[in-house]
Image (cartoon, rainbow, N blue to C red; front, side):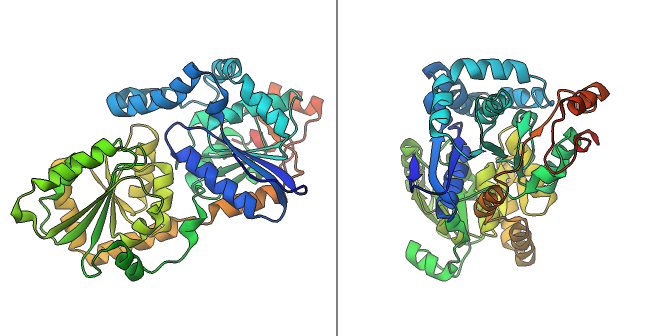
Length: 421
């Protein structure tokens, strides 16, 4: 959608893909930040899948959700098998070009000065267009997880924005100059930057201020095991409030409500609230003491910005497992490998306020709540900088010599920088 259309200022295109909701939410955050910047003119944020055919949309969008629900191990195998730089580049580009003609037409029609991709699908198409002189735009990619999977790699790029230092090191090792990589964090809605008092929020939400609150999330699409989590949390011995957010899955919300109607009197020390989809996730996170659910990239970034420790259960094999590793290594989360021990682990945390406080501090230290604004500012500052072209074998002397003969200029690094592995 077009968010602003003054007659002056640079034209900003944000390209997302509706495979899950995280890429779209990151795109929305970037678009809001772009609209707020005085140097921008027209800002357009579109879902790239809208400009493809039905079968392609099914594969990229619904097929992903189907695998999450019914075959997560297959999804994890595919993720791992594709995690080799440039391994399937030619095949992916061929399939993308066959199915994205309307998208290419829309991009050329808009004529963006700055293009930001929150998914690898549009970035590899734009990289090809720029390389062949069919498009003149500053292309950047924002990686929306805490690991730089090989499918995010594009041959021609102006800037990568990554979530953490490890991802920066990954890209540098592959051959991207350090000057075109920024550890920005994952862009989240600017509302998460707004300070809000927990006491006031709990009053607004009808929650008590004297006992902890656990936030159980099924994700925006409502595809997690919320019913089973609610069942095991009934074994908690610590008095708590438990808010269950079921996303857009109304069937799940009704199922959880029916489940609670049959709870025994022995759980009177637990107070449940069940919600559907909400646009006030920032307020619920800022009210909570613990988050229980899956560590999607956007969810993780939002929780960290609220200083909210996480209890991870059933991360999706692949990117969410990598996100889990990041959180666990940095002391901002615990992981429950079995539902049978979830209540035990949560009780241990709730009864250890010093550990909870440490986890909250670590979460805040990892946070980048202002990532969207910083990304937009960086891109506007670099609007006229040339792109980096990564050769097919970045360590190859032959490729290095060819680049020199062609006289190509690499972004801020000289023509040797990408070969230092």
